[in-house]
Image (tube, rainbow, N blue to C red):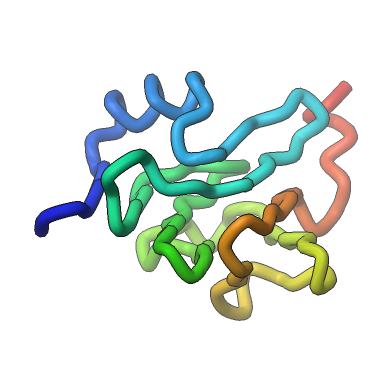
Length: 118
């Protein structure tokens, strides 16, 4: 569709993510920050193969805001995730987490992963 950016190629997505495309950043403290924004000229952005702590995530962004959800093919044994926004902290396993345009969120494991971060 015109004005839509839809990335499914893992290689293309990974290279774009490392350069901060879409407002997604990975941190060495085991968190992922999302401060999504639309690329110039796009009406929406969908990142379908976003992987974090063994989870598969889908991030959708449009002019109204963003939604982050677990992909249907995310492994059930993956770490439970929570997303903290200005509105509070929500578990990602129980549904999608959304934010208005211009807002941000921090994604992390529900329980600390000290062994993985040391």
